[in-house]
Image (cartoon, rainbow, N blue to C red; front, side, top):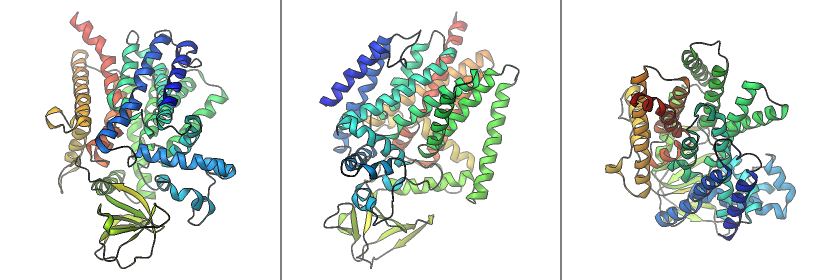
Length: 498
């Protein structure tokens, strides 16, 4: 915590005195206000750690703990073999079992093996681990300092989003920053060593660059940076980052070109064509529609949410019940296990993850498998309809689960109470937007884009990850736009009242 406090004071000083090198300088928001917002945002770092310490005994088995562990393993190896670390940092490592890179450090990681692009909705863990391996040196091995640097990245991204949109919120600039900085889930998860902070940073930088390129052109440097972030979006959270970039780029283009009259029609027409092309490409390459691909992800996620011991070899992905009597740990390597004689398990071949296979009594007790996950059974799984329900029913259940579940009367535990408060804010925001539409008989392009972006990501999360905790986290970078649409609409309600 000492390193965390020193870094926090240093960052606050840089914001208050230097405007964070010009990033936190604005005509509507003072440097002092920017500093206060960052201080409030940074409180998420100890809040996240101590909430999970109280609820689950720590973060070691969560993504935040695993990313921190992997970054520490790889960062520490830089001191013993700097050349190998640099190769890994730029993607030239040798991942094959038995290679020097694998034997010396990759086998000791938890999330690295999930870092290959395999299917839709994939989140590349390797990008996150590489970035946090750099933070490992700056944080001096402190989890809190490393989480604070992640929090700072998200803050910078938020400021860039704010600067890109502030012209549409004249007189409401503070509300925009309050929503972006303190929206409960986004505030909470960007205070940990997770992907959300980096994702917000990429979105903010990319939106800011897109606007500069579309409105007035940009330097070669800005174009190169924009291209770099665009490539990075493919490997981190493509379903969120690429879709967000497309929505904002199209919005700025339509807003800037005043000769285009029916802007909403042009926006949704382009999106419809884009979705059709993606669906055709999916059928040609993957031999299944996008909806079927999301359904497949849903089944895999539901299996994982059931919990268990998850092992992997080059060919197989194996799930056993959460009972360590079914496995035997390697005597010198805590990440390697063999399966006990007659232990039952289910498994998938890496070449066909859609086909679930079963072994009722294991006979191979010699093969060593790498531990991928150790997950407790989840009590927050949700249903998205019953077998045989049509697409419309599934979409309705998914959207309801993403936006309105839980509410206070169904909440269980502190995180679900927080989610209930968040859902109440979403519900009030949607009511304000509907009332504004009824008063004006129309909605401007910006709130339409906001709502479309948020609902699409929430729908995707609701179908693919039917678990209230996962939805609460995965929707957080997108659902904020529903609140921003309400902030945009609020002056029209006030003018009607007057």
